[in-house]
Length: 315
Image (tube, rainbow, N blue to C red; front, side, top):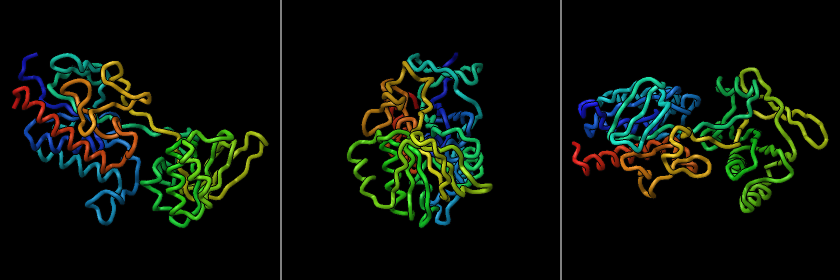
């Protein structure tokens, strides 16, 4: 492949991180090509109302915001393509990836923006109400505001679940926390915080059997494993906090990752262990996982890529 066919900058994945990286890369004349993945726009395409992203005083839906970001990236010349990277050779020079197992692409720099996917219980009504914006969410910080003064339920027993339960407790009248075992996996400090919050009621040894409601959540059915009893609880919001899985499997063995699969970067940058490869957004962030922080790292990734290309003499 001749050098003329080698991309300066390839962005893998869309969403706020990928599109922001594309905006900055395009403005720096890196002529970026962005492959969207199978869900163009990422997790935000499943979010109805976004009220906490700067610049939208009246709020906006997730899909609309992603269309805005895509249009802005294309306005500066980003080549946005639909397709999924199914294989990667990041250690070659130039780096190589394969789209849908067929198209080979070579690039001097790669920005990984593949995001993460929330884990769900897999209940039929959970999925239906989630897809119809009916009050099922995997992000209390994103959506808790919409349930102010109401009663909600959250599933999970780790630090994230405990943190989100206490966050919801500040906004909501009551929070039911559904825990599968007789103990929590969260750190002792987080457990104390939950136990000392009066409007959080923990349902130990329990699991959600069903989510009720036609157009919006109206309640849940919870089963207690020890007693075998199933009971209906009236709630208007249902939050699932059983973890996220970063979409990074195709990079295993090449990029350094933590035990959960999040890509490790040099602190204060988006640099990975491979020169010329940068990781942005939720693929590298298990702490904040917000649209605005993802966008910020997208900007960082493009600037890091621009500086890397200048250092190796590619302009």
